[in-house]
Structures are given as C-alpha cells and as structure tokens.
Length: 228
Image (cartoon, rainbow, N blue to C red; front, side):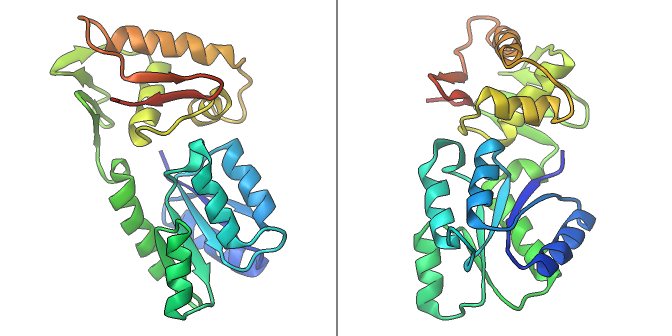
C-alpha cells in the first residue's frame, strides 16, 4: 500500500512538480489549492502525511495545522510545513502549532522526499516494515500470515486489508466512510453498515480463545485499534 500524501499548496506549478516527483518515488498524492480545501480533504480521508504550505489562501498553513491537531481523526497525523520563512522564530512557531518537520523554500524534491521518509519512519514505522505489529498481533505483508500471541489467525481478504489498515495507523479513529475508502476503494460502492459486518468478523477471528478486544468502538465516530 502506497503512503498517501496530502499536499496543500497554492502554487500550481510547484504542486505539479512535487506530485510528479513524489509519485515517482512511490507515494500516492492528493493536492489541495487552499487551506479550506485541504482541511476538507483531510477530514474526508485522513492521509498518512500532510505537506502544508505556510502561506495559503482562505485558511493559513498554521491554522490548517492547528485544526488538524484538534480533530480526532487527524490528531496524530504527521505534518511537514513548507515555507519561505527561514527565521528561527518562524520555525519554532510552526513546530509549536503541531508540525513534525519544517522545510524551507527553495528545496530540492530529493530533500523533501528524504524528509518525508524520515518522518514516516519515525511516526509511521509500518511503512518500513514487512511485519506489522501491535500489542500481541502480528501481520506479515509478504506471506499474508496473521498471528495473535503466537496463535495463527485465519482471515478473509477484506478482514486482512482492514487489519492491515488498522496496524498501519494504530490508535487512530476511522469513520465507516474513511474505512470504506481505505479498504474497499473510492470506485466501489458499498453501504457503510458493511464495515460493521467485517469488523465483527475481524473481532471474532482475533478474539478467539478469550483474548481481549483490541478494536475500540468510538460512539458516533468509528473504530480504532487500541490497547487501552
């Protein structure tokens, strides 16, 4: 699964340049031309990382960062700020608003890609591993084997993709619509209650033998993989 990058940048030529280089490097890229559109896209489908320009129309990059940190679905979203502001005070301000890294313009696409990979390794280690793990659950993305506390767990294809998505984003709350987009895809129409059916199947498979439930139901919000 390619890491999903949301690029919020009003310079269309820079946006296209970065999209080309990021896609060539193996990332999936979505672009927004202003802060308002970027926030809407992040809420509709939480990305794996957001690239946010400081100077944006309608809603500033700093405000975008602040709002993303306030929302449950994007509170832990990795964010890299893109800006022409090179002063230390500006960098500190951006980091204080919730950015995980800060890249000053002009920069090379290669430098940005290296920064993205570094942030994902630190905050989304799942993207650098073939074996994903959380609590006592492991999933091997190469052999498609799943185990819990050493016990083999048999999953159907949809339950496997659902568990993989949760393992790649532990403790993040996903709405049914977000899970439909991430696991089933945008092109396929599936009713939202179908998610509940597959969540029940996944729980039954994982919780065999009386193991505690790791899938948390968040009322009016969705589901999360959580050990608390």
